[in-house]
Length: 255
Ligand code: NDP
Image (cartoon, rainbow, N blue to C red; front, side, top):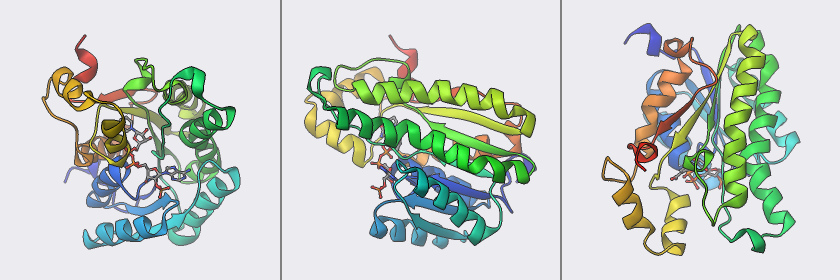
């Protein structure tokens, strides 16, 4: 394998890495040689993901954490350093949605979506910064959404969090370029995961609308995220920073 995509000796954290897009990315990173610490709240899902990653021959461990809580973000970074001795790659992927019309959200609901999707990325990045600096550089990959670009009536807080994720990505990229830390965002189209199974159930006609608008003619699969994760985490992307890259089967190119 070209060195540009070789992650042997690198250590990665993937928040929300116990399923869906996060596990798709963790799988790619593991296949490229990285050691993985995945973070999620659900111990059973964490254990199953560690088993799947270990079956690929990767060094893998899980840490039970709620990344909307600052102390748990800090503990997550400490856990990676304790387990693997260094940190090179942070994937801020954990996310959630509450689907309602804007007038119907409570303040607690707004805060829980913003804290889980956006504040968590800020807190984990901030906590990871000294370790990435110490490693001589590193990579942060933030997961946005098509709702980083477009609006949706049912997703006010989610869209605000995902729009914010792109702007946070740009600011971190500017601030930490001097430390050889590259920070990029990935904007998934509609991907078949636990999160969107709920949306398909709640939003009649969504499945057909996604198929009609996606030039690739299908929903994405978590495995579609392995390649972009490896690219952005490796030296191949050393001159790529502050970018927001759609992985969407063409969804965002079609009006
Ligand atoms: P899943 O529901 O399959 O995965 C969400 C992950 O986030 C789970 O691993 C979950 O683990 C974790 N998570 C949620 N809340 C927390 C928390 N407070 N602390 C720690 N971990 C948490 O969804 P997806 O794979 O679809 O979503 C992954 C990311 O991709 C999200 O940011 C989502 O917004 C984004 N995305 C998804 C799209 C799609 O079509 N699926 C489209 C665009 C963006 P646990 O429950 O164990 O905590």
